[in-house]
Image (cartoon, rainbow, N blue to C red; front, side, top):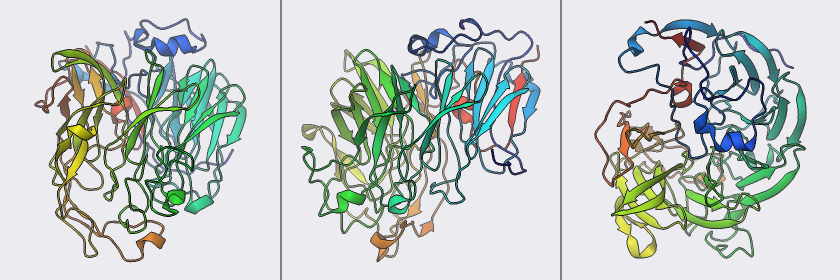
Length: 489
């Protein structure tokens, strides 16, 4: 264990005290089986996976906190993690115990009612890691009585949830290769598989998505997010650019048990803004992948931004909704994208249904419905040597990694959205640089928090009918301590 640095740490957790009960939960200490994960919605007092359920809803059915009494919340306990890096984690709550990660790769088990620390585990990263945007970790997965965490030096680690004892550790990949790999995302358990993504799209990595045996850490399958020789889609990268094309999988996906399909988003191609050496659509970058979780076989894909030159990762958390579309009930994939459009895609076959701008955009002139929704590009929206400041949205989106939340009560999808404006610079020699950054920031973002998942058009902003008790699940972002609050009658 390494000694932690002094300082404040991040996160805000909203929970109930006094009359709070873990309604619908399993007996205390019961293992978190796959069946419990399938029926996570039936345990509103728990939060058993990164997005709350396999559908990616991030919705809580607890109803003690309301719009009327939220103003009466008071601090119940406060936990200091003693680190000066930001939190970007979503805690798990299992039968009264909160499990959360603290930068860089520490796990804490806390009594959720009192904040009392039960145990702490910390992985020692090397001095140099190759994370993009902070030495952060976004969360855990659990199966049985074992917790799983990805690390910045490309390990996946299993830890006993009762004691904090390390059970096994597997090296995913050489974290120093190709300019640097990392794994900041939260894993996802699907049946008897531990699904793990990786990061590094800011450098010349080659992306992949892995499945491991949760009992042993043995690699079961690996899907390459850039088509390899022999793949039907090989050839969408000019020359050898496919070998260092990025397309990482750094956020967490979703799972549809009805169709046995795993959905996962991919990042930008590399180099981000300098594309002279990577002509073509650059599959499967800036895409959603639909995979068979048993084998890692690709069922279908949809590419939101072919040949992306704006750093518009498509690594947002997928949201699965059954909804009416043009008079028919459809199983859809709802996806507010970093490129500024809200997409509905038939999740059974990858068919494009609709896309509507939910922030200001200037790059798109419509979609080709005869070509499964391929975007029609507005000329003059590419990066330039001096910086193109006419492109909306900027590199942060749109929507980014901050998770959305779908309410089955209002049938609205609540989206963290921002309108922002950047100047995108296509630097000479950027193909040899570690990362070609935009030259100038032209403006700041603003929020438009709600998109209607029932229709093509964005809905007007509305107050959620139910406020999730684990606000950390959606808003556990930029604060520097962990705080619990209680309703005061």
